[in-house]
Image 1 (cartoon, one colour):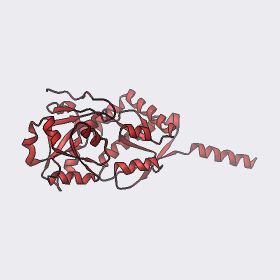
Image 2 (cartoon, rainbow, N blue to C red):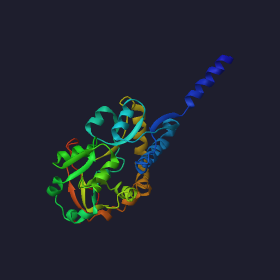
Image 3 (cartoon, rainbow, N blue to C red):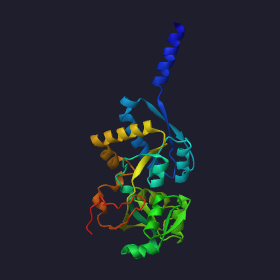
Image 4 (cartoon, rainbow, N blue to C red):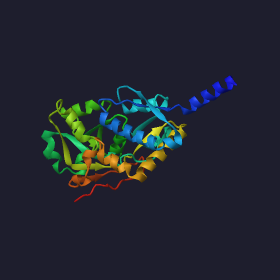
Length: 280
């Protein structure tokens, strides 16, 4: 009888244990982005807790690079991460196909040198395509720009891209409207000569999804259910308008004067209609 009770208590204890979910720890480079997606991830897990059980995060720290974090997801060092999608990533991992920032990651404003502000004032697509864009070595954005006949310098280090624009080795660095203001503030002491060309905007399909391991159907289903519930309740909209990463871009009509240059994402075989109003 005592042995049975001990076994029963052990079984209950194991059943009640929180699911451990390994995620990226916040890094200085990605603090705003990672904090935003951690919050969204936590809320999706919170609202699905009654159906799927308790959870707790286990944080993994490292010097951030997109390719390295994908490798960590592949070998089980991470259970979930957010990333802009492409066909290779969707073959390699399970994508939770809920657009986490409503496609706004594909709305790109240009970081430029202040001395070149006049050059970018009325620049055309063909003129811009001839100038050198700094982009990440493994980023889907680099593939999109090259597919649209833009000139791209693929760089491994994120910080180096800001340095290269400051030193004139790249002409511009496209950053999403979610990122550009906070990054310019962060780099202003190192590179006070940099600014943004907010009168022109590149727009292309760039959905950001949560990704999990190919075999982790349970976590993918839980996240899909949780995010859908947040969407139906209106909480996703509140998160977008209240979180530090996304709050500054609202109201969206503040971007209406930017000339929109629409690009094709051939990997997804699609273009995108911007949700930003325009006077052009």
